[in-house]
Length: 110
Length: 124
Image 1: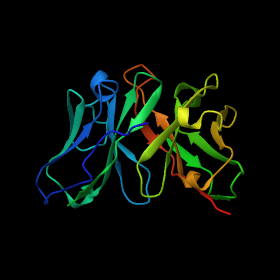
Image 2 (image 1 turned 135 degrees about the horizontal axis):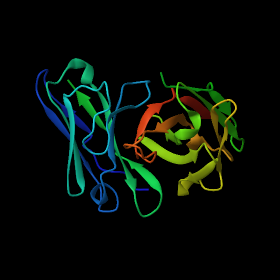
Image 3 (image 1 turned 90 degrees about the vertical axis):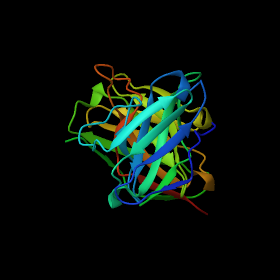
Image 4 (image 1 turned 30 degrees about the horizontal axis):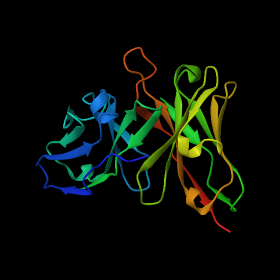
């Protein structure tokens, strides 16, 4: 299945804000609010950062926030910290057939 | 706390099968759905399928239909993923991932806890 489109890399300095986009279609990102974001450090399992487009799990810093406009979802990291350097993936449920599609991934450099 | 502990790394020959386990603890096993996701080296994750542990109902990604089987053992709170007819393209890290609730709905459409991953290497 076609992956959701993310920029390959985004960089920022400590304290700055960055935004990662995730573009899909009306059949996935644009069709509902089931978009989530994951952080993955090298050799580690993905970690849930945002679910339901805008919700943060308990224990996740409020520096992480999510939004959506049309077929594009976004993850914003404010007050960038060195430990935020990682790969980030979006994912969305695809309504036409029961499946989940992941984004192409974005490497964040601080 | 929630823990998902997977079985160890496997090396298989082309054409063989592999069965990966994922033992859950720290929550009520039958009240959360479990997914399997794989990640090729240097690539993004890929969804493989879901099992609903209460009744063992499964749903698989089209790509793996006919080649994957997901099962569960409620007595040991363990889910299993078996993949047949392996090729080198199946070399990947395989994760189990629990589906989080959305309010009181078990269909939360996100993965709130992940296993540590199991590397499966297919090589002749």
